[in-house]
Length: 183
Image (cartoon, rainbow, N blue to C red; front, top):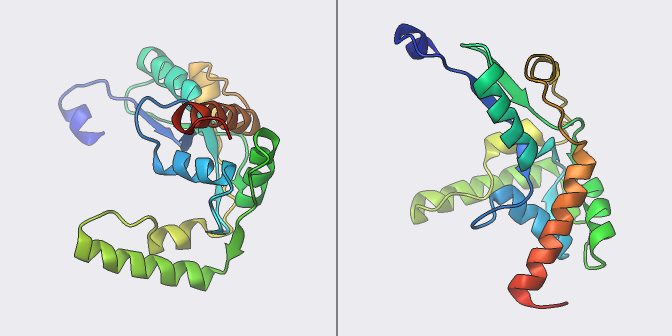
């Protein structure tokens, strides 16, 4: 922001939370987790909570910020409530009978797994699926965010998080049939 100010640029930042919804290309890590929960392929998971926001709502927020946003301001675009792994599985179960609730692993196990994956990443050069810093940040942390500023200043009105997730699971179910054929 300082550089933008020094160069007299009108810079507005948009900071979305965990984005879900239709994709054009490979699934993101977040979407892959949702897909695995939906297909009953995620056996274990840390007790994480995420604040999901639909990709279409993020796009609308970005467009609104480009026209109505104030220079130098940041706009947090997040869903209305945090959602844990157990609730994700319940919502996925509405879309597919294959959905299963993963067994929640203890924080110490999650930290040890992340340390192992970080070590492997140094050897292989591939990104680890999870970092210790993420375990420390997200384990049982049902974080909520105040999105009053983008609502007031940009007129941003996102769909509720659970609606975004239901629509996302419906999309993934449709895509699963296209990619792998009917169940």
